Image 1 (cartoon, rainbow, N blue to C red):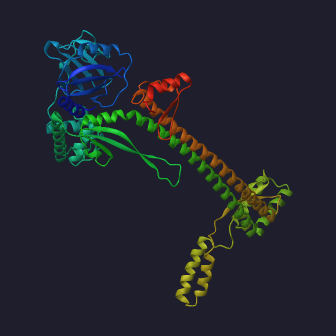
Image 2 (image 1 turned 120 degrees about the vertical axis):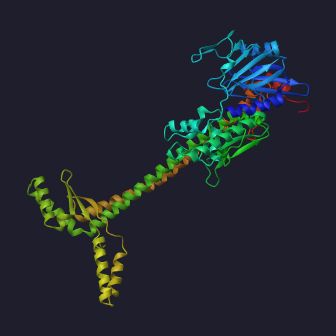
Image 3 (image 1 turned 45 degrees about the vertical axis):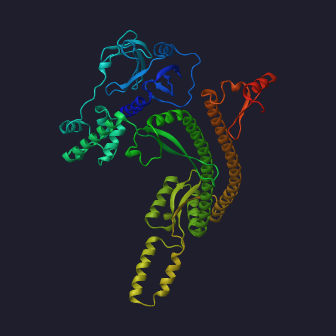
Length: 567
């Protein structure tokens, strides 16, 4: 709750609750309390949660079977008393509810900041009971029973900063910091309202402190934005507008390829005004801010369950996608291995003479027991002299009886040769008009793939043909392996898909059961007793809770308690 939210909700509470008497006080948990109020023509339930919220509620919240000591103390002092005043202390997020008048008055003070607190005091603000004992070291104030609650220490409203003061604030702020974050601690409006007013003044909502912002024109625009925020604060004094719940759209993934992803809307924020930064977001509109707040918090638990289920579904589908991607990568790697082996075999066949000559030269050197380092030196010397066989040899792997050769397709022109031939063609076109035949011939040579030299390991124990055959054998082996991998991948993917579908079904079932527990067990809307789990039970496909007795006695109990005459 921001200051604007508190002012708006308190204005609505004053319009609807003043003059009503307290019927009873219940505790939902150790921080949340329900105050039932009534007058002859109507009833209402006020919900207070320490440090979080205050609003009217129309939902049936679960109540503790045994009320806490704080709830009992509130019942003792507040029951049958009339709600006389609902106010905010200064501009702090503190709400003061006064029950009764003059010396018979009692105050219930709700703190909506930090860890929060709920304090019950008498007419002089002497603490009778307190939810959380604490000591404020800064103000040297002790919050405990029989101590006085410091009402006067609440933060008072401050006037709008002048242009000089605003200039000082912005000039002293660190560069690159967002303007709304700089102004938020100094002003009571809240970051959301400040952002809205900055957008209305022509700035970006996330505008940052820089030299451009410090000129007089922009400072005047910032000041006008703050004046606009002050107008919104004035509107909340007697607020009677609508409430808005801002939603966030989530995509629920679908396992079926033909079925589109389902949209899930979750609640993000609630506000008494539809601010500019939320105008393009999906939102729900309510007749009052109290209803919007009540709707937001009442659906929060159910949406947490939905989001948890959505996350589990995404993880399951992500695992399935990883399996699919892994199989695709394996198949792609095998295909590339086949193509590489085929290309190596073809290049060896295209360069048979060079490969055979290289094998013979190295074999001869080894047969003559020449030192390996000397063989390397001989190869380098031959390369320097431009020997084509030596130039093709790039590495000697004599430890494994292999050499690495750089082979290329001799039937495809290199890029340099193509450029030279293109230049020759252009010359021939200018000099001889009969050069069309040569041009066509060159075009035919350019059709095959350009030469891409490839490093190939050649076994010295085999001939050039045998080396080519070895690579073709590797290619055939890879093809068989690819076929087996495809078959295994189909089985593995079907198994993973089946497991994913089972996981999604389990997630949906668990989610449905959790929601059913929320509805039937905690909130107790349909089942007056939270003990339905002692029966045999399940959730039907139509989302009904079905119960059956474990024995004859339970069957009799179900018939007497839940079945109507004639059923």
